[in-house]
Length: 401
Image (cartoon, rainbow, N blue to C red; front, side, top):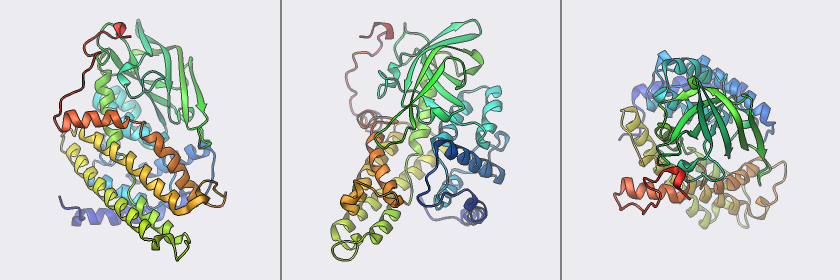
């Protein structure tokens, strides 16, 4: 694979760069700027609308759906150039683009596609993911939230947790159990849900970082129409895999180590700067090599998807490697800063961002698939190793202890 721009890709990069230079500064956040969750969402939606108006929202989606009809490489090029600016982007936008749209586009009806795709691309709709539960995190198929059919409606009862930005989301993607009499992976059904539906209660969780972007979501006698069901009854697990494929393939931040190198060069040390110390140079060089390797693997897997191929468990490698890298690179950043990283001064905005990354990196080893689960998937489905013994295989969910 040639990772240099072709003449066509170079022309597209120049086009994107010129558009961003003209448009992005009005939306970019100043270094260290602190804004409320509500303002962040509002500014994120405004930036998404600007991309839509400029023709850069949903680059790989067909034009008939409001996208650009471009290639996966064009999407990568845009992401690389966009990353040069400190723009308001977060799960409140990313979940809609990277999770909701893929599952609706693949498993949804024409009416659902017409209703949700364009407003999401425009930033008019924000989304959250209602998957994990107190007793179903790494083992997602163990969800207990129940949906019971009542005519043309479903009545839902249960609890979800770790619902990122649910407190500022318009809609959610939801997996529930509709048939407990079959094996746990087979009794699930997938829905979208208006977060303002009566019976939906969202409670933010106070995190160690001081933020509250995680939530508990309680669903009590929530009545929703069958028209909000995505895919067939009992096909919830297939829908979940579509969502998780997109989530894992889009893990990673390019240029992270380059900015960390610049940070080290600006940090005084006993002799010169932190970048002058051989131990830091070795750590940063190793981290940079790992980042480049993941960038190239990500490009290969995205190319597979663009060809209609299914990367399968290879996508798990992206998430597994990124979570590990973020934790290691964040630890390097803390070591470079020293004791000052433990009690960050308000004016040290970059150090605060590194500290937030360090705190978040531990959670990311679990979120979106725990390391141990992903290693099992890679071992069994990529390397062809024997599968683990599963006592619940083929057992009706209602009979599990």
